[in-house]
Length: 297
Image 1: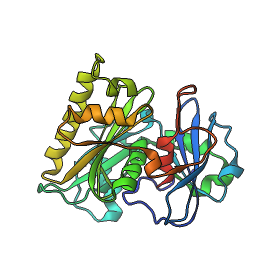
Image 2: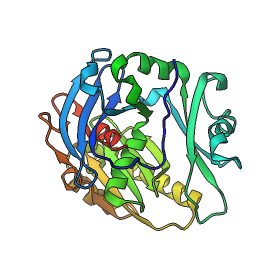
Image 3: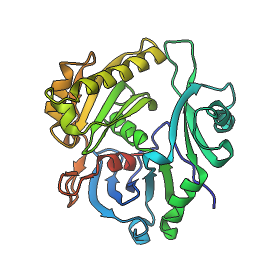
Image 4: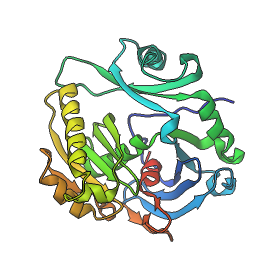
């Protein structure tokens, strides 16, 4: 079974048409349908939850779909960019990360891209490795009639898409606080330059009285500082703070404790959510925002 091309740096041309974003987990898929004419704001018209293996191909046939891998099925690494032509980059990245991943090198697929020029003299690249068997597992679970327009990506890149939608080519951070955990990414000129998964839910991130709040601030600041050391003196604009809870409260709280300026990421400013299900649903634990970011690929 051939593997699809995956992990792009630049977003594709915003051509008219339907597109889907699907976030895969072991227990369920979160799927959203986006209609985008290329000029107006992305309009999300449908969202649903489905058990793996129960997706109907007719929903996705004829539409581009981006499927996001679950966190245990891939690894992200940043390395010095190999001095090779673009066509040879993936193979070169395999050898660059061979001592950093937990899977045998011959069993993984690797994709990546070179980061934009930085203020330091280092040329860097990001690499994503995923076991081929896990990629095949997700391909086998996908409806055959819709497999020809399926792309595979990772949740951090979906958050990259949302940050780029709001900030274009600027260097910004995006923190998304979910029901169980949070993810921080730093993006610049379409590239994912840093990321970190954090074991804190949306309540811990917004509450200075939480026993976890000090650890939240420390982990966020360390990640932002590490990015600054890696790329040098770039113009970091601000940190977008997204939350399944109160994004404004979370941003205001973090703004008092982090060096970076924090701004609330309020989805209604950037997308039209017209689906029957809410974007975030506490009763089901469904958070469709990352899947929405996948549809923007």
